Amino acid sequence: MKIRIIFSLFAVVWIGLVVRVFHLAVQSNDYYENLSENNSIKTELSAPVRGEILDRTLDPIAINELGFKIALAPHLTHGKDTRLLDTEIAYLLSMIPTLDAKKIAKAYIMQDSYYNHTFIDVVDFIPHETIIPLYSLMNLRETIKISPSPKRLYPYGPVGSHLIGYVAKANQKEIDSDPSLQLLGHVGKNGIEKYYNRYLQGIAGERRIKVNAHNVEIEEIGRSATQENHNLILNIDMRLQNFITQIFEKRVGAIIIMDVHGAIYAAGSFPEYDLNTFVSGISSDEWNALMNSLDAPFTNKIINGLYPPGSTVKTGMGLIYITSGMMNENSTIMSTGSIRLGNRTFRDWKKTGHGVTNISKAIVESCDDYFYQGALQVGIDRMSTGLIQMGLGKKTGIDLPNEFIGTVPSRAWKRQRFHQPWYQGETLNTSIGQGDFLVTPMQMAEYTALMATGKLPIPHVAKMIGDSPYIPVPLDVLTANQKEKLPIIQRAMRGVCNDSGGTAHGKVTTRFPIAGKTGTAQTTGIAQNVKNRQSEKSMEYLKRSHAWFTTYGPAENPQFVVTVLVEHGGHGGEEAGGIVSSIYNKLDDLGYIKK
Image (tube, rainbow, N blue to C red; front, side, top):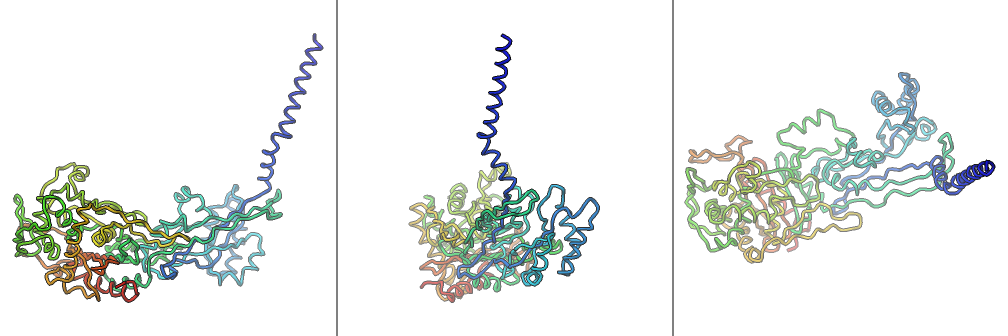
């Protein structure tokens, strides 16, 4: 019995050993083979060159300047002993005297540790012409690694800065959300550079090499190339972009030139700033000057500037009125120059009034009385719903980051924001684009395109993404009744620029008729006891109204929208009429107007 037990135990032990040997030798072979391969095969990633940005004529807007970066081997410091590091820095300075020794030391010490076994970048960029004569000599030094490091360059400097955006060093938060930035180093921070960053930065290449126990390379096993063709072609024409920068000199505001289908040919937010100052790191003095300027040069006024639309809103508002069922195109009011509501007087810009006025005359002459009285009939609910339907109070969908939505006032909006009831006086203010009503210049350009074509386009800066055209489909937002009555609004918009009583008559000098709407958006209220308004030119600059002029042309064959906003510019037609005219004539010179 004892012998059987001993033999049984012996058999169990041997069976266990055989099973274990089988597991280690056969079943775990793949695991240990992979583990061994990982210990001996190393993967090196190579950063792709950032895609270039080109205008519609293939003129470079953002390119890459050829250069190199310098890295030092790890473990050149031992506690407070920095003699090895000092030796290497002294060598670098002997080769390139313009380098900053303190900056190199700081960059190295921040990354050097016992656990770091990779070379440490200490110089981000050295121009190609500087490094080439020294490359072969410096590359012989085992403690120095020189590798390609292109630097973003913006040939036009400040021109179109808010559209294009810039790249700069990625911060830790950005690296955490996109680990590839650890390799790339730079990331799009604003404008097109930010919106299309993932596409522009491309896909890293990969190199697999076999190393020995001392991490010395034995052979290359294989490699994959970085992504090809990740350039971006924009709708922008830099000839137009340069032109609007020149004609808007010393003004503050925004210009948008867009075809009626949404392609943006030029757009400027003024004042602009030089993009190249951000690539290598802007100084604190330069940054503070940008951030503290009263003209807000760092704000993209195209999509982040919020302004009362003033009388520019009267085109869509008029369409809402005449299709509301409460009024039609034949409805008239008697404009006396003011309307009394409760204990408050709402005044027309024309002290004597406009007399008998219908929708066409109300738009051509920008009659406030008509819109006041119409607002009391139509009501804020129909007004706000219609304006949002037409694209105000929501994002346009433009391919730029952080677009603002503005405000179309309504009962629900006021209740949610202020927990207060709505008053009829606010309805009257809203009807002429004042009060809490706020829009961006981009929304106003899109809204004007809707008046021109009956379709709401999606504004877009990009033209080609790689080999694929980018053509968003315009939205069909108007009702059948609104489409039927739209020509009434269009004829009135033509009258604004061409009829003797039009608010832009005499201010437009285009080679062909255009249509549009002026707007004077007040920035300060006028006391009820003031009988005669002070002229805009006699006011302090910051108290003057913003000047709007939003247009499309040619009037009978709409092809382009030109929207101009001049901060504290006074009356829209006077301040912006010449700017708009010169832009249409430039479009004609460049062959974009098909007559």
